[in-house]
Image 1 (cartoon, one colour):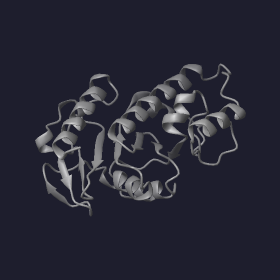
Image 2: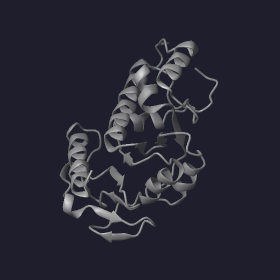
Image 3: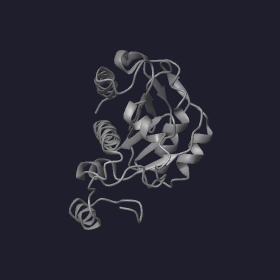
Amino acid sequence: MSETRIREEVCRFGRSLFERGLTPGSSGNISVKLDDGGWLVTPTNASLGFLDPARMSRLDSSGRLVSGDAPTKEVPLHTALYQTRSAARAVVHLHSTHSVALSMLPEIDPRAALPPMTPYYLMKCGQTALVPYYRPGDPDVADAIKGLAGKYSSVLLANHGPVVSGDTLEAAVFAMEELEETAKLYLLLRGLNPRYLAPEQVKDLTDVFGLTLPGHDKH
């Protein structure tokens, strides 16, 4: 896909996420790796609903701005995911309401923020890690992400929002949407003793669809 098309796709998906209320105001950011090793990322203080493809921040392989507006302050977050997940070609970070709410609950397991609720959650997101709170743009968040050793494609930043990587921009967006809907389900069912997928059902999914889930003994 050409760089021009990628810029247009970032704007298209950004507007879709914004118009459905998945990230308000100027929150959230999107990045896509390019074939030359550099990447495109949404600018700082830019609403995902009103992106200009010509003003997208273009970074070289070392993360230096080479053209466009100043990039989002969350560049360290995106960089850490690209460095630890070799298959990642796109990263989406939002402030979606239900995922943020989930990240604030005291019972959340940092190794598996959500239980195995639906097959599509496992197929799109795998498991979701929870990392401690860091102020937005704090470079130390990169160390927290690197500490996950590339095992998770979906991560919740405590009191902040979700960040998801994918092998395409579309895959990252779809996984983000699945994470948000699963967080919503969890909040709707909290305290109602819902029936989750049994270990043998999870194993069936991993066998049939070739899923790689981080080792975890709670289902």
